[in-house]
Amino acid sequence: MAESKNRTLGRINGLKSKISTLNRSINTNKKFAQGVDYSDELRAKSLAALKKEQAELKKLQAELKKYTAVFDKYVADERSEKGKKKAAAIEAEYAKLQKALGLQFDPNSADAKKIKADMESLVKDYQGALTAISGKPSSLIVAKSRLNKVAAPTFGTPTGSTGPTGAKGPTGPTGSPVGATGPTGATGPTGGATGPTGARATGPTGGGATGPTGAGATGPTGAGATGPTGAGATGPAAKPTPLETLLKQTEFWYDLPDYIFKIDTKLGELLVEAVDKGWDAKKFLAKAKLTPWWQKNADTVRLKIVNREKYNDLKAAGEDVKNTEYGIYLDGQIRSVKAKAKQMSNVTLTDLQAQSVAQKIYDGNLEGDELAINALLVPFLGKTTSIAGNGISISSFGGDALKNYQILQGIAKANGFSIKDILPNISALTAGGDLETAVLRGLADGSLDINRISQDARVLASQGQPDYVRGLLGQGYDLQDIYAPYRNQMGAVLELDANTIDLNDPTLRSAITDKGDMNLYDFKKLLKQDNRWQYTATAKEEVSNATLGILRDFGFQG
Image (cartoon, rainbow, N blue to C red; front, side):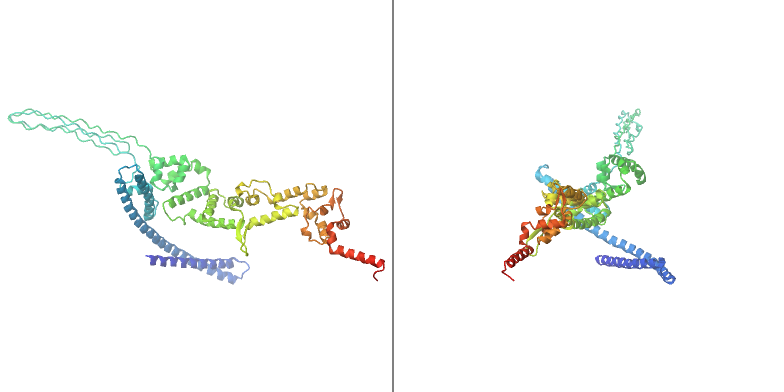
């Protein structure tokens, strides 16, 4: 069987490969057949080839469908066989536990309770085995009934009870010498009134007693008394089966999982009524559409809820759920969530972490809402540790978080601050007290705006500045833009890297005052009064030249 299954799988894969290649060729021929820029001859050839390939595609698809059905049958048979073996093992173990429970002196002892718990666990496993055998979801109540070798309870209307037996008629008197046989007592009417929708109970016939044969003359006929009518008791009024009992009876009612009937009381009541009255799926659906749950959820939302809960129920029954609608969705969304986390902060999520986020995206209908998805991922955003080439551990941000961090550093530096000076005063409790992490998380989920932080940094930088500088800051300029000409001049005169000059440098700040901004010529003269100028090569050269001039004046050099 395994060999046949593998051959079938190989055939399926081969057909899929052929179909994929054929689809590419069809797309190419379709492009040429519809292209106005191509020659009539090429369009005609492409159209002929397209029709031929489309016919071939239909054949391949039909063949693929056939082999897929065969393969599915192999899989179902294998699962059923495994289910049978598992069921047999569980039945043996359950019987052993039953015997052990029967040997307990105290049914409420700790040992007895442990045995009962083990038996309940086996019932759940047996439910999964039965599901595997039949290919359809089984219920716990059926599993338990089979393990206990009793019929599973049904959910019809109770039957009326049987009426009591009619009383026996008295014996006829003895005749003499030969007593004639007394006639047979009249038959009592049948007892048993009909219980509602129950089986009619029949009371026994009232027995008229027969007079015995007397000796001698014929005596009077023994009068056989009629037995009273057996009164058939009426069965109690039938009650609808409770919702919880119904839900235990099967995994799906009207193709809807248990969860649906529990979240909306109207749907639960409707199910009880539907089963009690034997509604078909069409009638149930018509009634269900009037319930609040149905009306407040769009078609797509209802479908998502149903698919999710079917997945949960089948998984609880031990079924393979990876190919269910929800299973396929989770698999794809988990990969997407992991990639997003890597992009945001170079963080590697575990499967469980990614699944948790994927489930929230599904339940909240957040597909396509980037900010909402980011908000679900920000709790994982933070510094990661890596080992540098020299073996030293480095803790830092990564991904988009690192980019935002660098932007914040640039904003701070451009206005004469450190990064911590410009960070908004928000709670960092969820980030373990790290304000930088808390701010980067806020930027990722959209609760903070980096442009707003930039502007706030400029407002902060404007404090104590001349009106001219404040005005430029208000227009969106940074301090480094405003002071750039003076900073460059300062770097040239003092022979420094202009980028290393602090924006809070007193000499730099003196270039712009409330009286106005200084022209660069005057600023250059001011710089020569700075203590740093005397250490420049230019200053030394000027001193050397001045000294040489004095010596010449005194005639010491020619």
